[in-house]
Amino acid sequence: MLRPKVFPTLADQEKQKDKVLFEKFLTKFPSTGRSCKFLSDQDVGAPFSGDDLKDLDNFINNWNNAEHVFLTKKIEKQKMKLWKLASEYRPELSRNIFAGPNGLLSMDLGYGEKDPKKEAKREELNNMGSRIYEEHQELVRLGKKYT
Image: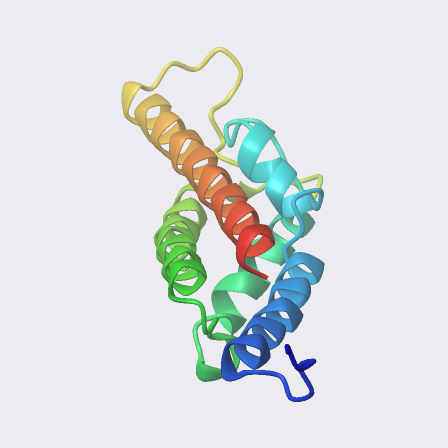
C-alpha cells in the first residue's frame, strides 16, 4: 500500500526555493522588460534612454551573491553565464556611450560619419547585447523546466 507524502523531500524543498527565486528573477529582469527589449532590438549607435538599462544593472549589481544562488546546478550555471556576459558588456557599453543634449545616450556616431573603429565597436556591442538576450532566454527556459 502506498502512503501519501506527508513531508516534502529535500528535493521538493530545493525545487520550491528555486521556484521562488526564479519568480523573483522574472520580476526583476523580465523577458518583456525594457532591458531585454534593449538587448534584443536596440542598435547602440542610435539614441536610447538610460532607463532601458535598469533591469540589466539591477541584475549585475544584485544577483552575484549567496542570496541569489539557484540550488539546481543547471539553472545556477546558466545564471552565472548570463551574469558574466552582462558584467563584461555593461562597462564596455559605458565606455562607448555619451549623454546627448536631449538626455538620451548614444555612441555619438554623428550623421553620415563613417569611423571604422566606432562602427566595429557598435557591431561588437550589438552582438554582445544579442548574446546576453539569448542567454537570458535560455535561463528562462531552464527555470521553467526545473522549477
